[in-house]
Length: 448
Image (cartoon, rainbow, N blue to C red; front, top):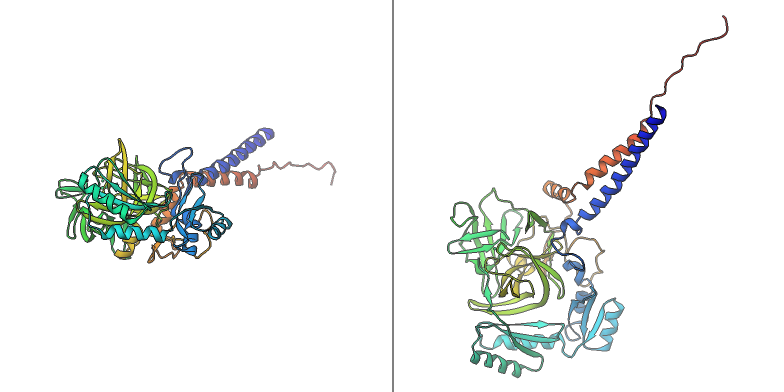
C-alpha cells in the first residue's frame, strides 16, 4: 500500500508539472500579439504594428528632414529602409540600424510636385501619390478617363518634371458605399469602422461619403432596429464621419469582427508605414490582407477629391465601405474607395484614423497606447501598440483597466490560466499533503 500511495503521488506530481508547462505555452500563444490575436496569415507573414515599424525609420526621417530624405518603408527582410539624398545621411541611417538607400529626389521635391498636380484642374478618375520605393510621384488614371483627359494629365506630368510618372489601371476609382458590421440607411449600406468615444458618449467612426450629417442608420435593411445618427461628416476633402449610438443594447467595446466568430481587440490608433502588412474587414468580402504601398494619396472620385489617403493592395468591393483597416490590434484607417475587386485584385484607399480622431475629438475606448515620438527612444519590443495623439496619435495612456477590459483580456488568454492554476494546485498538494502515518501501540515487557 505504501508503494502504491507513493506511485499515485508521483503520478499526480508529474501531471501537475505537465499542466504547468502546457498552460504556460497556451498563455504565451494566446496573449496579445500571439496566435489568438492574429487575424490571418501563415508561414512567412510579417504582421507588423505601426508602432514597431516607425520607431527607427520614422524617427530618422523626422530628424534628418525632408530635404535629405524621401520617406521610409519596411524592406522584404523586415528591416526599416530610409531613402536619403547624401552620404552623411546614409551613414547616420546605418548607425541607427536601418538600411539607407540613395535616391535622386528628396521628399521636399516630391511634395512640391504633388502641390503642382493639386493646383491643376481636376480630372475625375485620376489619383496620385508619392511612392518612396520608386522615388517618384505616381499619377494613375482609371478606365473612365477619356483619351483627351489622359493626354492632359500626361502633359501636366511632363511639365512638372521627371519626378512624376504616369500609368493607367483597370476598373474605376469609386467609393465603396454599401460592409465589417453592416449599417443600413435609405438606399445604401456601409460598414461600421471602429467604436470611439469622447469620454461620455459612444460613436461609430466610418466613411464620410456614406452619408451626410443627420443620416439615420439601422442594423437591417427594413429599418426595424436603429443604430444611431450621423452627427459629423466630412466628404469630399476628407472621408470620415461620426455616428452617435442611440441604441443602448448594441456592443460598443473596442473590438473588430474578423469573421468566423473571431474578433480582434483594438488597443490604439497609429499611422501605417509603407511595406507594412495590414488587414481590412468588410461584410461583403470578409477579412482581407495586403500591403501599404503609399501614403498621402490624392484621389479624384466622381463625387469629389479626397487627399491624404493610405494606398494599399488590399482588395475591396461595394459593401466594404467604411470598414476598418488595422494591424496587430492597432486602428489604421477606414475604407474610402478604390478600383478592381477581390476576384481580379485591385487597389483600395483608406482615410487615416489618426486624422479623423484628431478632427472629431474622439479616441479608441480604453486606449492606453501611445504613438512613438520620433524624438524619443524606440519602445521596448512587446510594449503597447502605437496610438494617436493631437499630432497624429490619440489616447490618454492612464494605465487604468476597467472591469470589462480585465474580463476581455482574460478571455483572450483562453484556457491557459485555468490549466496553470489546476497544475499549481496539484503540485502543491503533492508537496504539502503527506499520508498519515500509522501509530504503533507498544506494550511494556517489564513488570511494575
